[in-house]
Image (cartoon, rainbow, N blue to C red; front, side, top):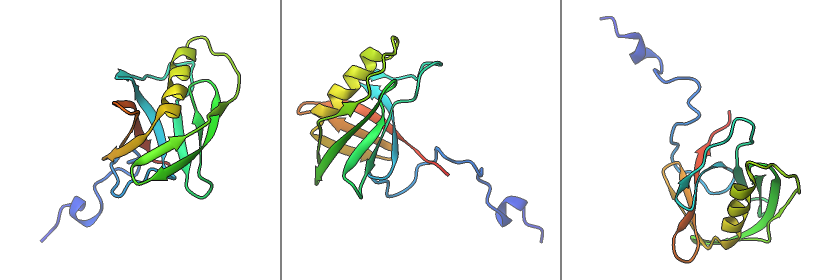
Length: 138
């Protein structure tokens, strides 16, 4: 009997960076900004992708807010999170500054987090204000 080739080898693409992976962790994952205060976030052609990485070993969060790089300490207790203060570089990027300023404010206001599949949501005391998508690097 001849088995189809797919039964003998994996039929998945070698570049499955967007596949949902089990046991996704808040820490040591690159989280790309996808929504802010219920608005979808798109990276402008000339802009940088906004993201955050929480590094477990140092309890530091760092990333890019769309124009400037930023960093902060953070503390986690169960599903509660506290970031801040958030420091950042001081470049000016005309088209990204409103989104960047709101992103930093939202990070500093975050009180809770939840992970659903490959999505991370940070919430203030009343609602989810920031949404991220996990991006996997080879």
